[in-house]
Image: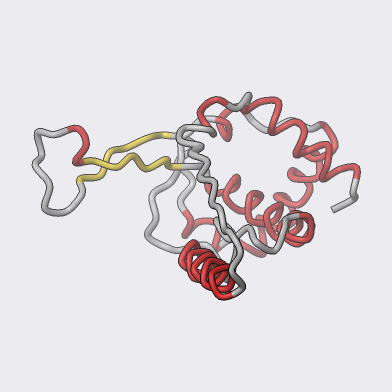
Amino acid sequence: MSKLKPGKSPGRDNIHPEFVIHQSTTTSGWLCAFYTSCYQRLKLPKTWRRASVIALPKPNKPAEDPKSYRPISLLCVPFKILERMVHSRIEPVVDSQLPREQAGFRRGRSTADRVTLLCQDIEDSFQDNEKAGVVYLDLTAAYDTVWHRGLHLKLLRTIRDRHM
């Protein structure tokens, strides 16, 4: 709860971060019991599974162009708290399973790091008179094609089975 940012917009439940921050001694016990119930039943409230989406204009872009806006999903504050708790538990487990070469979406690593290493690998191959090859795989909209409910269920079961 201490990582909640005041002044952020609430989700569909209209619970503001300030309420949870200022009532943390009162709400923490209730939230803990509620999260435990969700965990045991592998079920989240319907309200938490829906986001309010608003479009924010990008700076210096024409207002009449739909591409000039970026969508923002407003999630329920109690869900954000749960999400952070789950993330802090699964990140080390997932991170230990990924190859060290994977840089995207990992803490302390960036695509720029991988480009630098790629250039170094090419240079090393050139110096050793060896061939070097690169394969680019475009996963554009890959997340859009995933069965989200199945992914969420698998994630919840994995967390439960590993007692995270």
